[in-house]
Length: 172
Image (cartoon, rainbow, N blue to C red; front, top):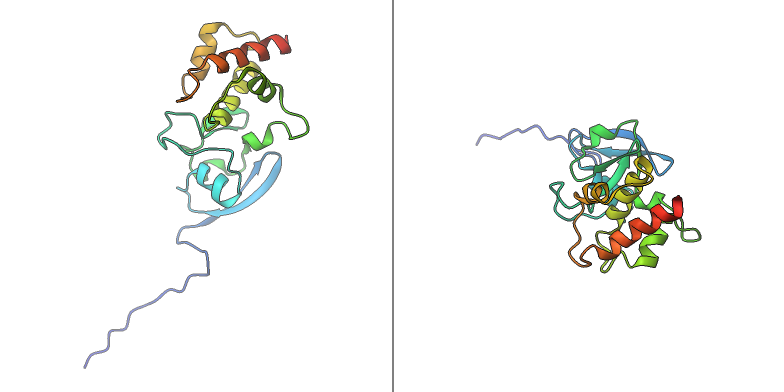
């Protein structure tokens, strides 16, 4: 009787082949996370760092629910891979305002009813903040363009547009 001798590699608990330690800043705090280079940023944020404000929806970069900032630029975290965040600065909705002091964009969404179910709201807020940072007094066309990558299935956008108008008025 022949004995089949196979090589068996024992992995450390929680380790995955190809996994690397990544170091990057999230909301002003440096993090070290073990992930494969192709792990999506949204997965790292939600599952590894427990930052669940960033939502998963379409997973193909069309809805904006997963929007965060990377080095101050708006990105879709569902399309951003782990290897791309090494050494970068990520800001999520949890890094915008506090429970005690809301960011002006958050306050405007609250005051103007710029949400209904709230699922798209974190991504919308990140997009509006990016817009007013770049264009403090945007035209209606610029607002439409800035929000084009964010879908809301509940509000019809009226409250969201009122929130943007309030932010622009309050910041001027």
